[in-house]
Amino acid sequence: MEKIIVLGGKGGVGKSTISAATAVVLSDHLPEKKILLISFDMAHNLTDLFNSEIGNKLTPITDNLWAIEPDPNEYAKKYTNNLITKMKALMKEMPIVGLIPQLEKFMDTTFTADSIPLALKNAMFFQEILDAEGGQSMQFDIIIADFPPTANMITLFEIPEDQVKVLLKYSLNFYNSIKEAVRKFSKMFRTLIKPFDNYEKRKELGKEIFQMLVDLEERGERITELIHTVGSLRLVSIAEKPSFEEIKRARDLTKKYIKLEGVHINMITPQSKKCDFCNNIRSIQLNYVEKIRNEFSNLKIWESNRLEKEPFGLNGLKSLAYEVYGKSIKAEDILNP
Ligand SMILES: Nc1ncnc2c1ncn2[C@@H]1O[C@H](COP(=O)(O)OP(=O)(O)OP(=O)(O)O)[C@@H](O)[C@H]1O
Ligand SMILES: [Mg+2]
Image 1 (tube, rainbow, N blue to C red):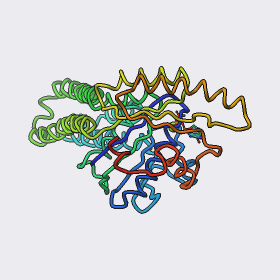
Image 2: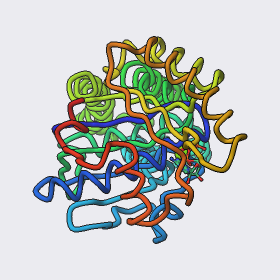
Image 3: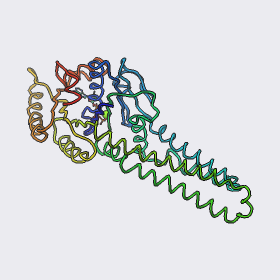
């Protein structure tokens, strides 16, 4: 993994469209690199952007560009199913206890994918994609992640550090509550079950469950490290006050997770020969452009005008890329501004 580009900012400022445009133009200029565009927005809109059906599987867009709108439930299910299967196996090894139907039902209903918070589900997917050992069939050189507005984006960064621990604790509590019930039960029937008790097998299964949780935590640490080293945040704003305030906040909130490398000022009203109203709007916006430039003077600033047509499809996205990055685009300037 060489680079993870993350676009953030207020709602509706062009994060998804610029993410897609960036992915398309990088795929054009770097044919030898494998690029992945991921949408982490629940209101997925990649399908609209590319005029082609993109769902919960890696969908080829060009020879070296794939897109995906992950279904976070699927990734959470993988984890919970795996855990439940192991727990049930553990139960089965306990004579009598394995025969209590309520216990199995309790497991099925308590530890479900639905009980995991959405941000955590997204993180499980993000981690699987980012992690070399995650079992993904493909390794990507560049990932471009389209995030929902700022607050939700932060939860996603926090996850490898904090939420994995939360899940760990959650799983352990769950495991312990079952163990406790089993222990009480076994005590009552100690003499009865003793001859059937396969302690070694149980110990082995217990170890496996614990290892699953440890692996998860270790993976969280690897991801945090990866985002620290190859992550690159770019904030998108329009030239208006609320959006400008939002990227200042986002800069502070994300500081400890990911390096901020640039700011997009999008949808600036173009100069017009016929429209005084447009020119007035433009001059107000240019004030904000100045303010944003001053505030983020140490960073690369990309300015882009509002296009006459909404940038849809590969060609639309390419025209937006030229508008954003200039006519003589250099991939290197996009990757390392
Ligand atoms: N430079 C531009 N010129 C014209 N239209 C644009 C430009 N940038 C974005 N748009 C349009 O603005 C709308 C909002 O863009 P987009 O969906 O990318 O924003 P977003 O920040 O991802 O929104 P959300 O926060 O809802 O995910 C879209 O209809 C898009 O086509
Ligand atoms: Mg979006």
